[in-house]
Length: 111
Image 1 (cartoon, rainbow, N blue to C red):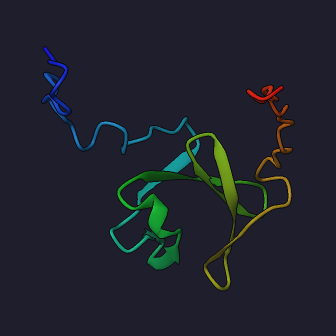
Image 2 (tube, helix red, strand yellow; image 1 turned 180 degrees about the vertical axis):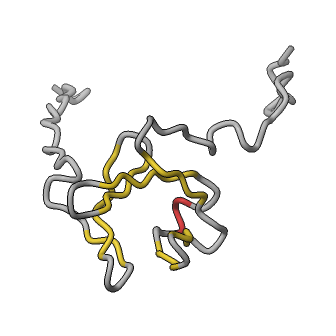
Image 3 (tube, rainbow, N blue to C red; image 1 turned 30 degrees about the horizontal axis):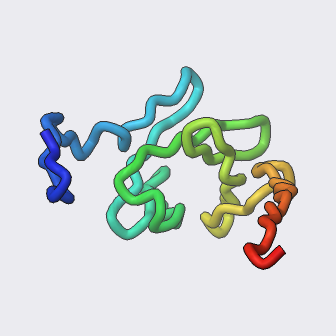
């Protein structure tokens, strides 16, 4: 129990460092583990996925003439099979519109 003076209290839950790292992909995907440098190995070739994905699994889905690369439900792009680079697709991410923020106005104490 926290007292008013305490800032930190140790959690009763045990920490599992791999809990959110191993993402499962549906049938038809090949899974690869992103190493500590941000690379995966696919058919003997190193492909840079990116450091933010270190320790996670990514999915590779074979399309008709291409290989798409996925992180959970998000398509990161398509693998260039000549250069082994990931090319992002125009529709592979959502563009978020800026939120309209209404400014709150407070009356001045002098008014």
